[in-house]
Image (cartoon, rainbow, N blue to C red; front, side):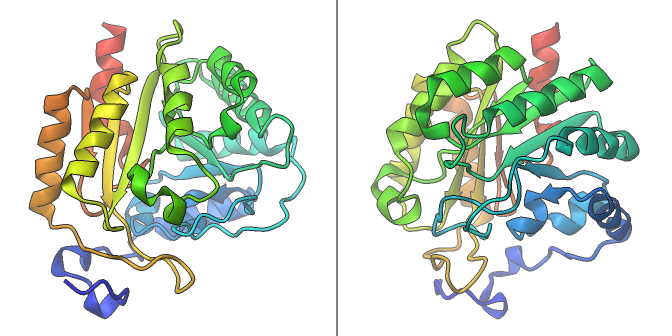
Length: 295
């Protein structure tokens, strides 16, 4: 299928997402009123209508400008704003008003900060725990330049789920994630996975960037070697002309085959499909594994 990125050229299975669903404006206005950023908006997620209508969102802390410029990502790169000390309180307010039971927190990459922004993650986790000790907290972090102190700080705060996306296969890193390191991302996940805090670990892959099946399966095996618990697999879609073009649109049945293979290899939970993103239906996908951990 043609790799050209045009909505008119999308295959049929990628054309059924309505970005304007009933109820989504209420969530959008609430977030704007609290001056909160979401990766749903900043990364132009195709699921935004569905998620906002369900009164869920992935909060993006530490501003809306990233210090890196990954070629797959729609988040703006540039000089970031100062860390906002009141941001954790506003997130708690949003969680309360949306009546969330499972909260997902991510951030832009902040290589400009000595701690990589890890302390702000901790502040948010602590505020959420204080608000509701039973709340399930999932975080999706950058690599913190593999700073062990930053990771240990977050581990000590004990989120329920720690997600760091591997994104693509090693061969494509220089083109897709030139400022990141495949082995470095594995080390980030491994440090959390091997910590006695028993935090669930999660990672994600985008397909359609030019990878092949053998390479994808090898990534599965690499993640399993470091005891990664959960995996998300979705279709890469070019968010803007300046981003990498799509090389292939993966068929739904292929995503199902990848899911079956990942479960066979040993992942405890897998979400795989054209519209899957890191935090898409996060509560539903993680519910079974979280329940097992409490039993």
